[in-house]
Length: 199
Image (cartoon, rainbow, N blue to C red; front, side, top):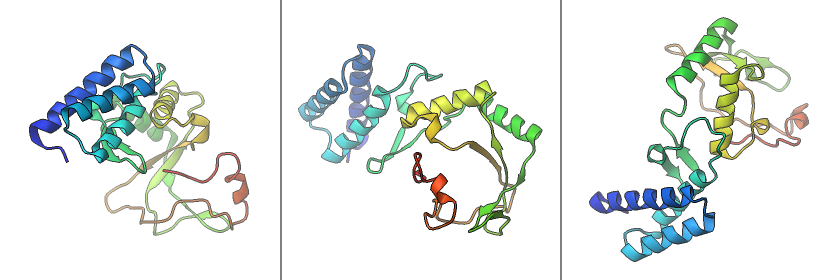
């Protein structure tokens, strides 16, 4: 693993190479070749670190021009390369968060339900309050959907509607498996084109 000054040098070099090539709109292959050449030349990284860096470069290179905010690569934390798990602190702005909270206050929140074999019911497993948010007529929610689509490379129509949750002190959602059980009646409508839930 990289440590100390070596890690700082590698990070700066990585950012510089990607920024320069992304501005010139070079191909993903050229970015990977340039990055790998630089890493091999200075001999600072192991194979696993190269894999993580390349995975992160894929996020920035496919970044859409329609994204409402510029990509700040320094904020991204690679939690896992396989499966790909990235952490982006403060992904939503304070204004976006406040807008969502206001929608919830106007619309009202109801006790969150747990899906059973026949219908959704209240359960001690899930004690939060929540509400589905419709992004159809809301420019801010649509912008958030676009931002999520850009970073995940998954179009909005493949996602689920926003669900706002409020957890008061003592409320929780106990650990559970969150998927569509294909053996339950009516699940075929969820398991068609969109497919099984993924996180």
